[in-house]
Image (cartoon, rainbow, N blue to C red; front, side, top):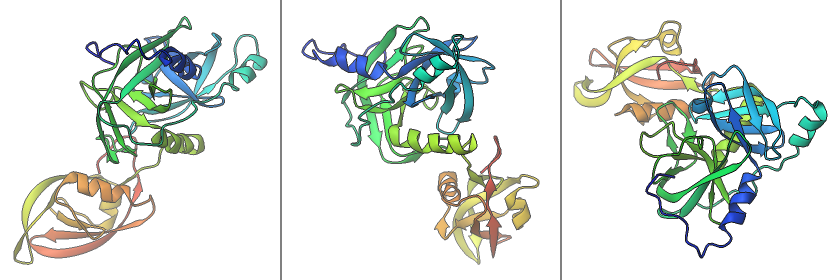
Length: 312
């Protein structure tokens, strides 16, 4: 995936077949500005990179058959860098669109966590219809994690380098052709990240149902601080701002409060608070233990859905 990645071994005689098999579910996504990749994850639906798509008013999809069709944006989730496009009709009419919707989604999604050093490839499609691919290795793996944009990933799969132009939204697969997920350049300056297949499935369901992924928030900005709680030292998060008309404001949180616990969990860093909030569905209640002027204050705040941009 980067310029220094070694070429696959000549012994991998089956690799071209694996690339062709995966590319059979890969489309080109063409906007006025540039072209990148998308995957026919389910019949009639293409998943791609939300960051690469940006706010393109019109999108054209070049399908594995070579047909160029319109793409309609169903929804996007910046938190996981996923966007969902509906495969539209061609100039030939709805029959062509029906044929396009029958393209099989990626088969054999990898169930096991890959290991650091495993060989992988990313398969994309040129606007003219041809297949292009990049070859590299898994650079890092890990458990579930959250992006700085608030997206929840079922596992960490980081590539050993960046993505070539046009491979944002590409299918990333093992040498056997098992699809690991979707390539994203949005979360690391120097390395591509794979949005795992399990995450794609979960986000796709939400985008189909709502056009977005509902995420909870309180509406506060915080920073780590040492405070005093009932005469004893304590670590927590200083509330530096409270958004107007936010759940925190309605629940009585004030600027200058120090959040010591949320939902019964210690909150020594912002990520701990984010994780606790994320585990609370919009409309649910979250208990907060605060240090206010050194005294303990307990509040119950009703969590709301996060606006498109905002605080924790």
